[in-house]
Amino acid sequence: MSRFQRVLFGVALSAVSLGTLALPAPAFAAPAAAGSATYVVVAGDFLAGIAAKLGVSLPQLLTANNLKAKSVIVPGDRLIVPAGGALPTAAPSAAAPTAGPLTHTVKSGEFLGGIASQHNVTLADLLAVNKLTVKSVILPGQQLALPANAVAAPAAGTTTSSGPAAGSLTYTVKKNDFLAGIAAAYKVSLPDLLAVNKLTAKSLILPGMKLTLPANAVQPVATATAAEVVTAPGPAGAVVAFAYAQLGKPYRFFTAGPNTFDCSGLTMAAYAQVGIQLIHHAASQATMGTAVDFWNEPIQPGDLVFMATHGNPNVINHVGIAVDATHWIHAPAPGDVVRLAPIPPKGILTSVRRLIP
Image (cartoon, rainbow, N blue to C red; front, side):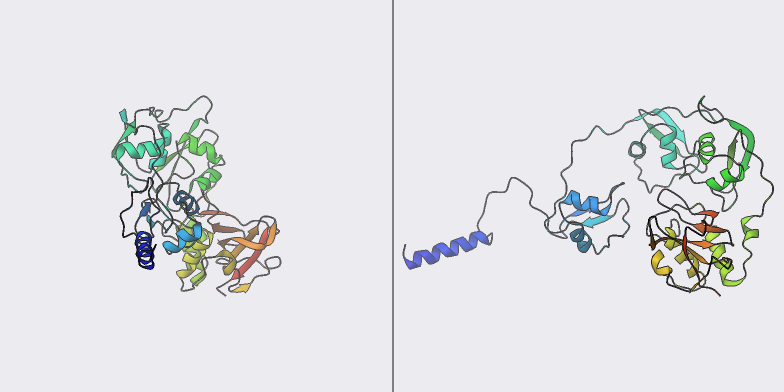
């Protein structure tokens, strides 16, 4: 081959490498470049799981979308597929659920997950037959179609032979009430209260709603209302009052209201009411204000109360707001709600900090 021919051959090879010559289409889809494909978040997704679906590392997914490992994603969000990743191939699935002959009329205080549970169907199937999403709003009086495999809900007031019996007492929900607090006030277990009212621990209750109480409920002696308990004057009282107003709202990691909170998000939002800016991190909040010698002096309303990781007293992982010397309001954990509870024993507490003198 002459030198001229070798030069021409080299140019041809370069053209192939640059994609200027037509090549047969590959038998598989090439990974999408960042920005050219998006992934739609579905219920149950989490960032590390999405990264695995797309065939990329978690840091790649976070960088491409300007996110952090603690970022919150919700169904319907669109994420950019990083370079080197590819949208998952849709797996064969069962036929879409069909609507059956039964319908459900939404009542005050009901929510989609609770309705699905009442009729022994999955939330996904209930949403599908009604063309709803987990974010859809339902209103009292609205008619919902039920999947073909739905069962009729038991008539109001009936119980199963193995379930708790409903008693003659009823309770009218007041502002700031929450299910566990109502159960404790009437000396019944939370599961029994939920069972006789066909609720779950995540059910929403609203002022004016009537709850049936289990047969073993005991009428409580009149106690102070939340408004009466909040007696601290000035900024501390405002912090505690804000915390009371959040009772019953669901826990959600790395949120600070208005509808969901994690522990440090609740304290951050409460102190923002009086112009004090906290960091959204329990351990960081434990460095603010002044330390309280809680072994020898009483805890005061508004004090931040801290607990540590189990088995490691040097790592703080939980915080709440004291409402008095013996009770606090905190957002405990996923699946729970903001609640009023006794402050843990002193041997479990790690630290108490006072931000308002």
